[in-house]
Image (cartoon, helix red, strand yellow):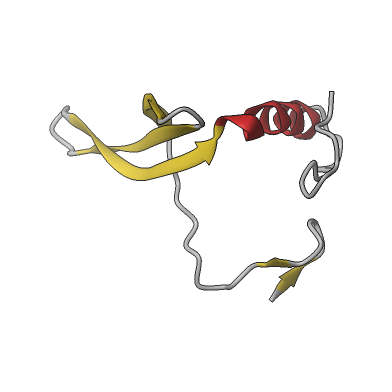
Length: 91
């Protein structure tokens, strides 16, 4: 399946969505990447809550400016505009 948001992006239907409620840990990996460890909570029904790691995402530090700009745009009701493949990151 092709996705028109980013030209030439292949978006297979077998990639799972992962629901996360929070950031458990943020680590610098080498000189150029960050690892985000995300968690979700589970209510055990007896008043106890467990937090389970559901995903670890590693991304280049260089993408963070574009991610933050896109997040601000989406939260303000503006459309997602790709900042990939040579396009300058949004300000």
